[in-house]
Image 1 (cartoon, rainbow, N blue to C red):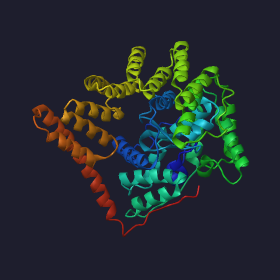
Image 2 (image 1 turned 60 degrees about the horizontal axis):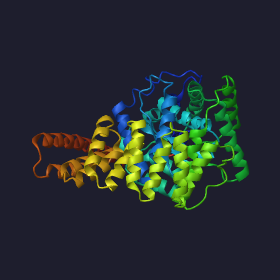
Image 3 (image 1 turned 120 degrees about the vertical axis):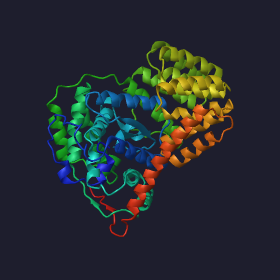
Image 4 (image 1 turned 30 degrees about the horizontal axis):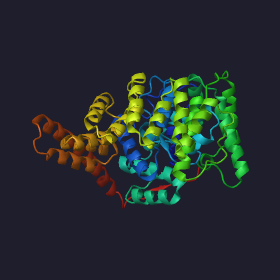
Length: 493
């Protein structure tokens, strides 16, 4: 978990990994700069996420993802020279794990959230993964494997991550992505893990967290391994925790003054959502790893509200949430959850009122905006939906989750070209360039298209066609090497 899953599998050239392991942050602007351009790294990240989305079950919960993204932004704020944008996503998996992918993508398992005892412990994991990203460890890994094209490399990285949880899925992906590629042996070095531990500790301190939380979480995982004997936590199977590594983290943490005591309520609210989601998606109760006895009364009340809603006891859920909204008006999560309850109870008009009122308090909040758009569509208010989303996408054009909603609204209004354009943007964001080009062609074939709109659609289509051409050329170049080389991955840590 604390180590990037790729870096526990994908071998890195020792020369590329040598460096000072002091607690001073290296010049991240220069590390790996000669290997991949920012544009190439972004493309590699998209290829990686395309494979991840096909193989992992991601959690679609805007407030939870926003909370995790906020933690990441707070940590990376300690590195003003960082140029790699971070994108945190949530994986529906009970394994205690997290991983850093190319292009600044960081995956957090729900099992990690449910097993951490504090926000600081969760942050210790996130800080470690951010260190992998900012030090461009994946870029350095790519240096030794430059013959691989970006689509193949992205697929291989995703296959390794998927294979840790489901070997059959991972092996199948590897078989398809590696079959025609150049021969290389990728060997693993632990120096990146050491560096990520050290820099993660410093990021925690600079963000105001107690670095001893990383040591505490290490020790918890080690104790869990003893209790489970042969069955180790996912993190320990892919990132072995040696006594030396724990001792080193403890010694380094001791060099810093204790961090301030952080309010854990926001973290407890996240755990509450993960608990109930786990019960819903897996039709089971969460193991005893989650202990609520130390929670704040506010978090326990919120959990009661969510559990009441899950049991369709909407009056109880509504009563608790209304109290929480009144006593903690600074938390956007409560009106968001209250609106969810109204929608579940088939009261979309009340959900609309709640969301519109909340957006006056939290203007521009994307979680509330997305839910309001869904609510307006449910009320058959397509024009209001389109106006809301048009304004939001103008400000946040990369909030791609809004494009399918925009497409529904445009289609309901008979604006076929706009609907196809929105679907094209959504498919493009997922790496499905062929489908995106098809949607743009359908937009171009729409009768009565204005000349300006036609030019805009044609320009966007040509841009995507260039992406496809580059993709196909890379695969063709790689395939020409299939008789000269034979790729294989080393899985031993």
